[in-house]
Image (cartoon, rainbow, N blue to C red; front, side):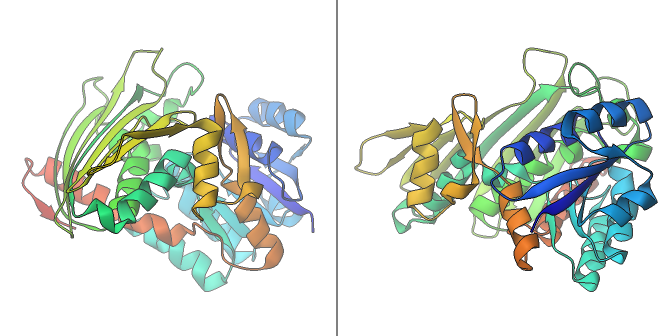
Length: 349
């Protein structure tokens, strides 16, 4: 079965997903594209061999809709696709808050369509293998996580997403638009979060658009995490992460990039480190990924998030990362903003 794909929104993130599709082993074809910027839609369509169409015609032509617009449009577009019985891939964040994200989950579940959210860190070998190491009984209890995420404010350079400083389009700033990834992968690796506090700043001067966010997350199991999320103007730093995790008997360090290294040490054992292809194949050997899903990246490989999604559509089964998986991170982010807006007092999730 050749899965017919249509993109609504043809900016930077759409180009990123088209790259993953180019390197996917699943049988597919990008057949339609739509964007409010017609010239941008034409450039994207020419690149992938698709036709530029309006939204209604796109829904008539495809089996799956990739929603890669600004955030406030996600809910409407996901509902439109689901009402047509079409599969849906929606970029993160799902919505401008947890309530809109939950409505999107309700829409796809009521329609019974295959759906997936673009929380890509769950497919990076560092995080996949780190999760398995943390689950090992030798690790002991989680103690603390230090997570720093920085990138230049994405209204410039290759991002060019000027809508990210308009709260009517994006909702809020770096914590929601960028670090929803970080919040999601932390609770995926370390367990549920039940209490948070946070502080945000708007240094660039865009109202409601935080460019510095510092949050404290308390895990149900007792561990504590600090998250620092920054949008700066250092164009040589497009998106970088540094993560350290301490358990009673395990230390982990991740540099958070697709070609980066994971370093770890259990009590009484030597320091170990893996990166690139070696790390990806260690994940496969441990049952954390499929060889079929590997996609090349500079310096190594990562797991292609779109191959299992397209396989699920072809096979008529749920995807590995449905929209419902994103709601927990949205609730955590909402709670951090509630804390920050209220002066930093702790808030229960």
